[in-house]
Length: 120
Image (cartoon, rainbow, N blue to C red; front, side, top):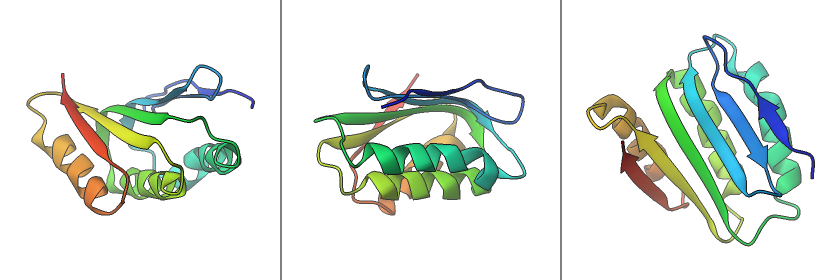
C-alpha cells in the first residue's frame, strides 16, 4: 500500500501513514478552516488500509492544538478503524495541557477503540 505523507503547515499537522513500517502518526497543530478538505485523502487512505490491515495498528497523535472541526474529522477516522482488530490510539499531549487531554478523553468515550494517554 502506498505511503501517505503530508508536511505540516501553520494550520495543518504532519501526517505519516505507512502500513509497511506500521507508522500511523499525526503531529503538530490543526486549526484549518476546512478540515474536510485536508482530511479527505487521509480518510480515503484508511478506507483502503482497512481492507488489508496489519495485525496491529497503533494510531499516534501528538497535537499541540486542534480545533473542534478537526476533532470531528479525527472521530471519523477513528470510527473507520473500529472494526480493525488489534487497533488502538495513543493520545500524546503536553503534560500540563488539560484541554488536549480532555479532547482525547472525549474521543475515547465516543469509540470502542482503546486509548492510551501519554503526557510528555
